[in-house]
Length: 459
Image 1 (cartoon, rainbow, N blue to C red):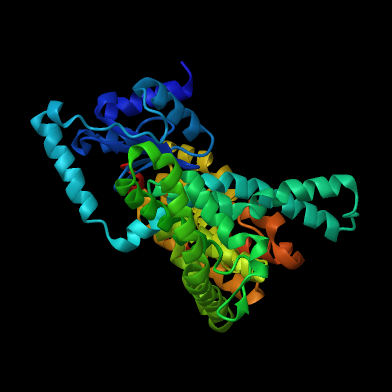
Image 2: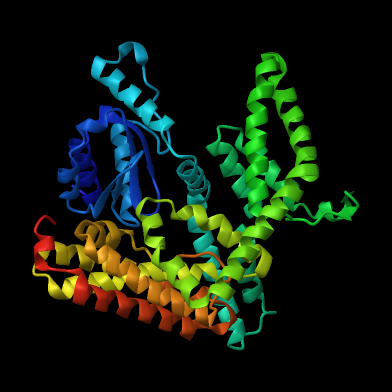
């Protein structure tokens, strides 16, 4: 039996069986399961499944498995349950038992109690998580090409032009992809959301004058695209209610596109432009003026966002910084959070005699160095408690350094060592030194103050 098959079967055995699964989804490292009855989950047993690095209890059950393997486990669960990945099983209310109806009611109450801020960040994460593999691949290609050009390669050669074409593709049409995912997230027709993205980034905007000024393609950035695509989904649903079914395919999209098109140009672009300018300029000013303090605070408090899975909500901010300044100074600072955690995990490995804990660390360190820190977060530092805090302290040191050196990334990508090719202005070595500082800080703080052997008893 393959590892993913065994893991899928064991996971189902500890969550109440396949009939208890409502929805299957996953990101780069976590399996996300929506369940009918969460009381059937044996969290302790789940944590003991070989290959499971951690369990997060949130609105969905999040099982940390790690990159690569999580896709395979999700596919196995999909085959066993008959649910497509991302597909939700609709409840048959008439055939539900009393316990299932109670669980459904509990889930509905739980959904009502979601805070607007958490809901907003989760929505953003759902829009951008599917795009991250493409952003990472394209960003690394672009970074490698620019690194080669800086080293003296001729950018006019055919191979360099092809690589630049491949690397820039997703960024050229990113607004279209974001619009598609936004409409999908809010229950609209994805292609209409894609059209909303086309509205705000179309080069023909430069030929249109509104409020006495020529429009600027891309004004408002991805924030504008998200709002326009949401409006497209919102309006589409309401138009469909009043259009006869016989002509729905013609008039619903037509009316929706026309209305949102005009609203996008006359209202969304100006408002989103002010919003994106405020966010990007505010962050740059904060980093410039705050310096050491700003870098330390931003890096030191980033791990809690990762802990609850809300960190992907910052992706549009990075992309907007790149759109405005051609780089993001925020990303190298936040990347120090994972580096501090790597240092903390190494310190625990050096001090502990717990073989299971040492094996978890050995499995999580390679991807941790490459910028994927969730296996170490959920498998090591968070369960132990105090090492999570000392990891944040190490991250703060690295973040303070990056803010002072003023490193920036030319593209969005995985952090850690993987981010080096994307660092702007040739500051590869200064960025690497920041990683070393965060590694060392996390290690020293954890070794001296963050870990005692008794903490590992229940791991």
